[in-house]
Image (cartoon, one colour):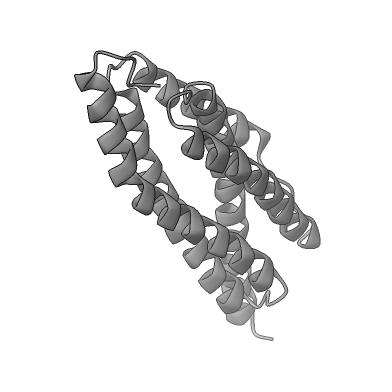
Length: 176
């Protein structure tokens, strides 16, 4: 192997590891967001139930990322994890003061899940390009879970908006 090929392999590995660490931190942010939202969904039981289920998926996604990192003799970034968790808590808290909290959270969740989807698609490409085929099935499993959550959020949005408007019109608590 030439020096240039070794440098290229090292660069690919580095980018893959950084991407895995970023995804790990992103999933910690997701947990913080979901934890805050789950407590505010009394009027939207189907959303609460699905968020609780996705929270479990997210915990398993973190475990998968850790397995991949360990297979590379790497670990996650505690600083990134803590920073993203705090960011997630603050983002969810910011919406909690809004009268239309459920709507803002719904929009943010759709954006967040699509961001995660793009991140996992990129990680799959990186794993293939960097020569880590064993990571691909684990990343694809997570990608499928994120895509399923996007479908749920997209299909549920009309129901949430309709219920929100109906509750507001009746003078009831509509936000959560």
